[in-house]
Image 1 (spheres, rainbow, N blue to C red):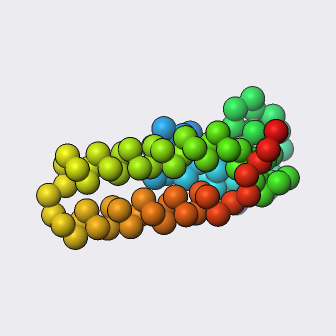
Image 2: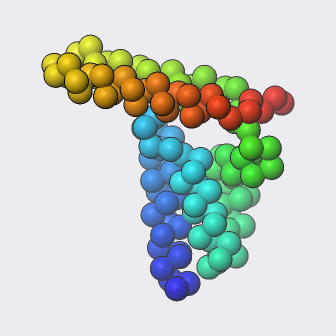
Image 3: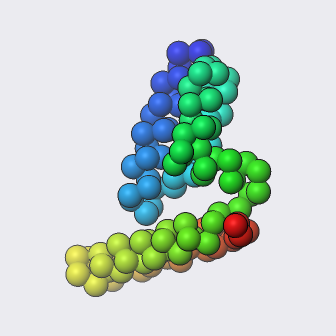
Amino acid sequence: MRLFLIILGCLSLVLGIVGIFLPLLPTTPLLLLAAWCFVRSSQRLYEWLINHPRMGEYIRNFREHKAIPLRVKIISVSLVWLTIGYCVVAIIDVWWLRGVLLLIAVLVSWHILSYATLRR
């Protein structure tokens, strides 16, 4: 079970890092899953993740405050709308698929904005 949790944690961590650059892949939930896996399987990996200068901040902010920094909210919502907007305008020709993409953009934006804003 320990090896399974380490593998799942590493996979979640990699997907979380990719999610930093791909707006539809949720970074914070994947990093939280990695932390959950690591805390149950490898204290060394858990400490590394929590104390990481970039990724640790996502986990600590969410764990302690259940909040997302304003800058992260703005960047996330902007990237969602830029990428989906580009697809809807320039790539997708099917009307119902455009509607599905726009609905996804609305729901992802609502999800991000539904969390409290972390003020520093």
